Length: 226
Image (cartoon, rainbow, N blue to C red; front, side):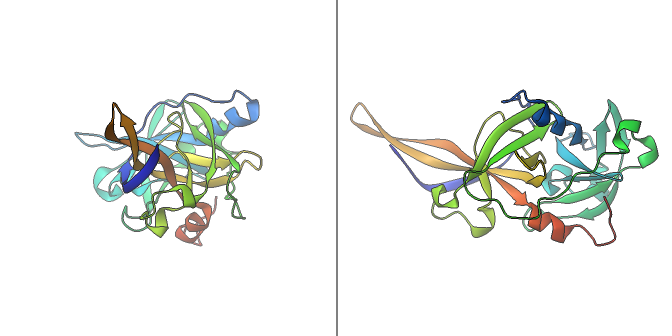
């Protein structure tokens, strides 16, 4: 059995994520995870991460052009309007930065501030993916295990685990609890096997690409503090 090209990159709509570990330190990361809702007739919902000082980061394709879709952030059961601080692009940097009025946030958010990871993390290091519904563990995957024609920009990946959150979910280092990146899309390949003497090809999900903290740091304007 093996993998063959072509590879497939798919945008991921939000799904409920079940916690893979129940440790308090893992579960605490759910406090930074929020829902992003487009306010239009056919909404597309996804996730985001609260960084602090009213700033939320998500994948650009979740928002879909914030000036047009008028996204809201669901925090503490309330849908809060947002202001687009910086809008990225799916085909460039798949990030969007939103701001909410801090006066509308629950008091518990006043002290919440999430750090970006400062150092790159190597293959095999454990990560936690957090959504409002829960957390799940995976690990940083070697890009050498991806289909060989995977573009270089999509080579910061975690091993595919169905329970980990999808677009806009936060990837955190399991030990340092800093933000490693934001989930953007999944990468799939073709698995080749034999059945009853016949060659069978079937798609299989391999990894989830995340926009790394280094790109997030470059994306955030210098005047934005969180």
